Length: 603
Image 1 (tube, one colour):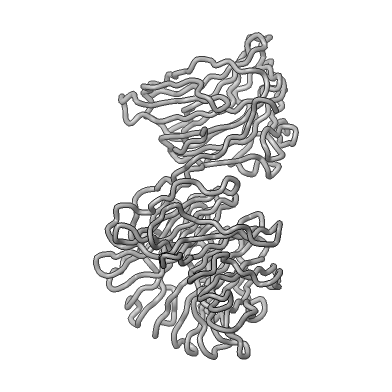
Image 2 (cartoon, rainbow, N blue to C red):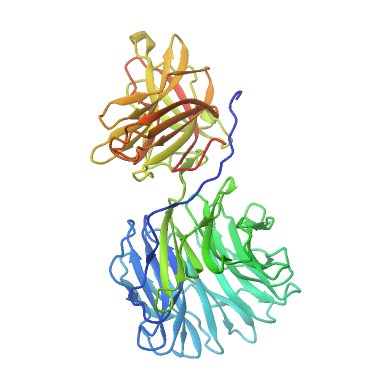
């Protein structure tokens, strides 16, 4: 389509949702080994090991948080058996917020065994704790657990067990906690140490296990992986993950993407004896590994222990700890499912003076995420966390073939559809609004949360649409952003005008006195265009420093400054044929919608 080109995604920062906070309330001794899992919506649970709190060595504790980041009660002990050490916890959750925690227990039944406990979304135990490993000879250590959306889960661990084999073992369970068969050996190469297992689960029960193996790659330590289907059957051969083999490759992580791909990350020892964090995609479509790539852009001497999580659309977040200015800090980066890395790396909790170690990541389906880590707390070590918005609020190219990426849709009985006829980009589909009456046709995103800055871009095609010129009706709103408290008020709007067959666009902002400020109408040719707006709320009542900017086809088109607009923030956005008047008829096409909190969209 002439005159319309897709614009690359630009740099985007992650937006903190408040400051960091301490999770543990018991602060005597060491609280460490933090892990975190998402609950329903933006809820989450943090799990850790606490020394001395249960009266005998170390125990496993958890604390749940609501979607608003408010602690739901005090910390709770997970392990019922308290003699000896219970440590190295791992946690995974399903789509309803039910979750399972596994850990290593010393002396409970044998030497070292793996135990687990299931919980519902309210934190109530589902049954009692149970031993995961069947064979108890030797030791069973360092468990990792992953769950699919339906609650089926798999536990992997490092140990000795079947015959003389030495390596990584796994056991599968259904959503009711019933074992689906016995434990089985994951790895095929059984000589030498197998440590640091991790696992990620796909929808339907398939999973990928990764681990560190000594000696197999001809060097010291290397990262290996094995994919399994929903029956626990190996899919293809064992994978040698790291391409760079000099020195140690250790502390792997893995996350599953909805399209069947996995992302595997690890710490890689460099020639200078420092470490970088590296990753590779396992490509389901090609049944193989993509090229190795760096997770971060920083060049500090030691970047180690990556963790990862993925949202429902396939974007993933990674975090690691890195040595700089004499202390370790936790850093992260978000990767867009289509465009790749978003710049820059971000400091999880900048300004802290103590070392921040071993960050863990939980990503909600909608993309909001939380990072937890270990840090000195004035006594010894404590567990801290911080919540984040991704800069991208919503990005929908309608590849799904429907409006499922949006919170709601007003289809007018089938007049609003997703169809290949409306495709304006590269996704194969677009949104078609067929106007034949005065019903508003739109999709709505409720992802914004009282945004003080809101950016949105979409592609549209005028397609000969007539807003009702014969009845002196010349305008239709294509996009509206509004707040929802104390009442639904339009904050920003984009208006399409047709006058004498010629088209123009205008952006509009609501002011505190309920009047509105408009840009001039900017003429556009009939056909396809991109439109982007950037609205920034005023800093306070009567400050008159709000801004509204509009771009058309990637070029600056109009700017409003000095806006007295501080009374509301953006809570939702609508795209389509809105405020349709009598006499309107024709078809509008929309595609390639993206909204952000602060990062540039236009290059």
